[in-house]
Length: 115
Ligand code: DGP
Image 1: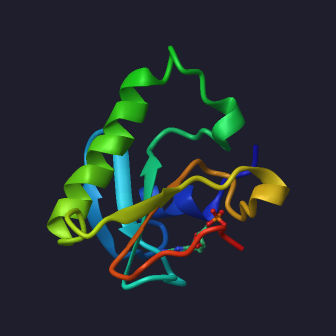
Image 2: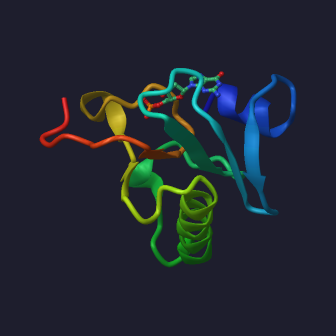
């Protein structure tokens, strides 16, 4: 699998506005924000998309991603009003970057259904 732009961000080969980091997870602001708060939370290991998640093998990592989302929601003061977590998978899902990532969106009222 070809290296993505997110691997380059992990390796600090290209800049990003990094807001959170642990041994397993990195989070940075989306370059094209769709809400006042729009953060991408990614695993440091390369998992291209949701269908390549193995629930047992990646259980700790998945927990780490949700812990990061909750921590950031608190830090960004959007946890009380609410927020949205999005994982796009594949072409129909609207996925552009094939390195697993969770969008944390908040700071405005979200609509449903999504576009
Ligand atoms: P998705 O469509 O779910 O694959 O979302 C990919 C997101 O990644 C999209 O909202 C824009 C963002 N993005 C793409 N390239 C870069 C980049 O170089 N830096 C940052 N910070 N975000 C990027």
